[in-house]
Each structure stands twice: as C-alpha cells, then as structure tokens.
Length: 224
Image (cartoon, rainbow, N blue to C red; front, side, top):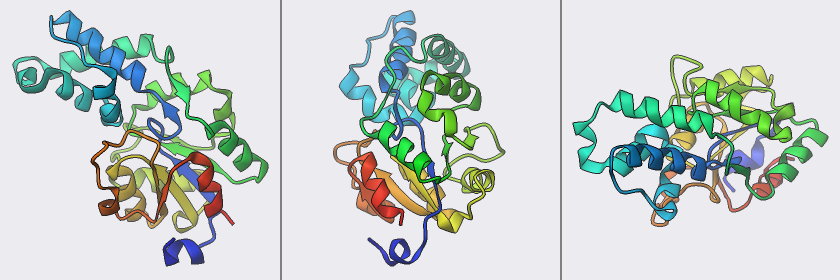
C-alpha cells in the first residue's frame, strides 16, 4: 500500500459498473454481433470482445467493424447497437463473485457507496433494478449525466457530494485506465479491479493506482 492508503481514513466507496460490479460483457457482445449479422459481417468471439466490453459501443463497434467502420454511418450503427442492448440488457449479465457480499458488508458498516460509470444513465437505470444489491446505492452518475465523463474527475466529485463524503476520503474502484485517471484527479484513493475487463498483456502498473485488488472482498481491507 502507498502512504496515501495508510494515512487516509476511507469513509465511502464509489465503483465503476461494467467490469467492476457487473459482468455485462456477454450482453454487450450479443448487441455487437446482432449489428454485425445485420450487415453480413463475421461475428466476434466472446474471448475477443470481453476485454473490450468496458469501452462501450465505440470500442466494440470498432473491434467488430475494424477498418470498414469508416464506410458506415457510425451514429446509425451505435443506435442499432444500443437499441438491441436495451431490449436485451440483462439476459446474461450477472454480479461478479463476491460483489454481493461486498455491498452487503458496506451496508452493514453504514459505509455509503455509489456508482460512477460511462454507461449512459438511462441504460444504467434500466439495468440496476434487475439486481436487488443496488437498492442502497446512494449515487448513480452515468456517462451523460454531467458535461464531463471519465477520465474527467467531475463525475466522481459529484458522486462524492451525493454520498456526503469528501473525495479525499473516498475509494474509487474501476477496471480501466480512465477510472484510475478520474479517481486520481479527484484526489480519491484508486483501486484497480483486476477481475474486470483488462487485456492479458496490459501493464496496470503504469496506471498509477494506489492499490490493485484481485477480488472484490479485498477492497474491505482498505476501509478501516
């Protein structure tokens, strides 16, 4: 642990969503493959789209269409992708192992927590009710909730206001570089969710996070 973790009292926790609390990759991948089939293109295998799932529609469509993406109307492709995803938003999606226990423990300890995601807010609000564990989520900031989105710190700072915890006393947990950049800029303690959508050859040490967690329950060790 760094000195920041040792000397800072953590009073609240904020989480990324896709690849951190929820494994949404297979539903996102199905939306991608639906669009690819529509245009007569080859589908993408699960092992190929899963590490890209945190990058949303742009990342997945870029993966699937590759160099041919510029031949299409991207906004139309995105609209088709999101429409299919909205209609099939929780077919395969599930909580990661230990997430339910983690959130229950935070509730029992009366530690406020929330979600800061780049997923559109409307889709996020449609998805979360499928999981009772989000009943006590005190803040939900989507990628289009504010003017700025991650890696800008504004969404984290707003969520800290919502849960009434100064950003300096808050953990931010995510599985992408933009998560760590946003958390660091907000002066929060940052944690990489190593179980998330991270490429096998990704050097997370360069992200400058305060901590790497291999499993969700490891996060509890950072809260005194």
